[in-house]
Image 1 (cartoon, rainbow, N blue to C red):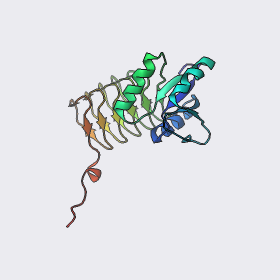
Image 2 (spheres, helix red, strand yellow):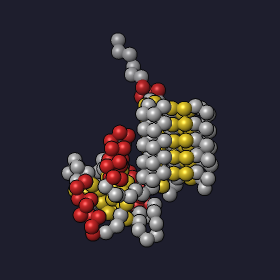
Image 3 (cartoon, rainbow, N blue to C red):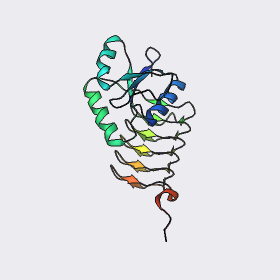
Image 4 (cartoon, one colour):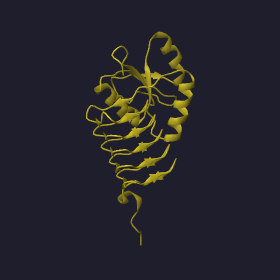
Length: 198
């Protein structure tokens, strides 16, 4: 975000879009609205649904803004981000006011850090990643583009998370380990296993 232009449009009007818009506003962005091809109403009462993605061209002609692709599903977020980048749009990085980011960490464009996320020294987070509520990325980790770290994920030092991987709620990765590209690592055991019916 720059002082000259802090206007953003949120791509995606679902649950994740609602959270991203709310966090962005608190972080000092002016959220112009949501665009979504399938939504029929805004998820927040005071931020308008501007229409489908096709309205971006007319909006762009009337003023400057950046985009945040707020889609939880990694493949779809990648498709939209690549399409919009090819059309010449720029992307904002949204960091919640309660998130903690080391001055010696790097965060890519279009990435979102939700409340209480932590990124420590030497860590690098790629573009269009989601660091969800209260997740932590310790020293010297590498988090690829389009990764989604769900709430409560814990990455110890020197962990590598491949492009497009999704780590479920509460997952912990011990130091020096890697998770492959486009992998899915399940959430807490309480949600992975169902009771046996007799």
